[in-house]
Image 1 (cartoon, helix red, strand yellow):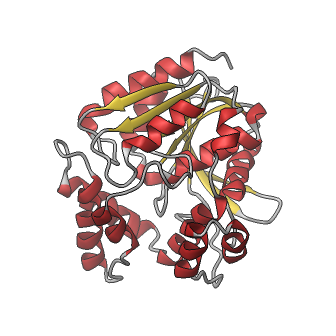
Image 2 (cartoon, helix red, strand yellow; image 1 turned 90 degrees about the vertical axis):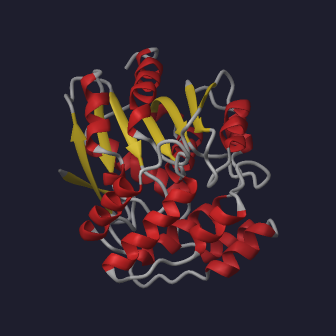
Image 3 (tube, helix red, strand yellow; image 1 turned 180 degrees about the horizontal axis):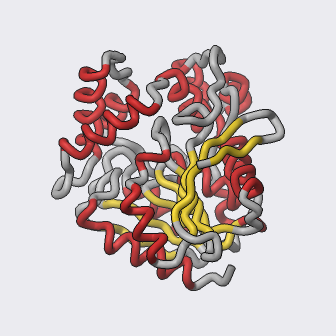
Length: 298
């Protein structure tokens, strides 16, 4: 349990699992989620496979710094992004995916790690992609899970998923837990979706740090960052792309397009997985991650 500081004074909370002597694997969580959305037992399996696992809270979530009071006009940001006006979208956003990628570098620096494997999920995958594009010398490999390229024609959510994502949840604890779990079931695995497990994760996150204000700024960062297609085409970082075929929040075409763009990327499409990581699929996911990271020397 420790924190790293960026040059701009952002404090980033992180925890580690496993031995520092093993190859480092940084886990980057997605939009509106805290590091505890990575089940600790999942991280422990990766650590047992010989990886030094690092989990962090992105800025504006969990126990990391909050940019209190920096309001965002979400509707204006969406309109600017849809019009292709990235200049305006960036004016409306307190930060972009580039700054979030820089936060990852700050955590690696705090640990004295020169290069790491980086696994990002959803928005975390976008952050990991941006990090690979801007700072490829800091990555041993890239794993982009249930993410997309920023190109609007790929990875689009269903209308139901989009409406659920953009609808604010209640602020009262029990109502928040019920509403948030119901939303997550929309994009969860059809076979393995577990409402009780989702409610437990939401409850733990609420009790650890309930901070809906940060969600709007993270969403603005996604809108303001634009497509990454050109940068992904130039990557030389060994890349694994993982995507669930049940995903309705980021359609599988987002993962397929990512793998298409990155030279030499391997694509793993997973049956019975949505925008989640169901426990019955952990053995498959852990094996794929360990196999991919084992192929790249530290």
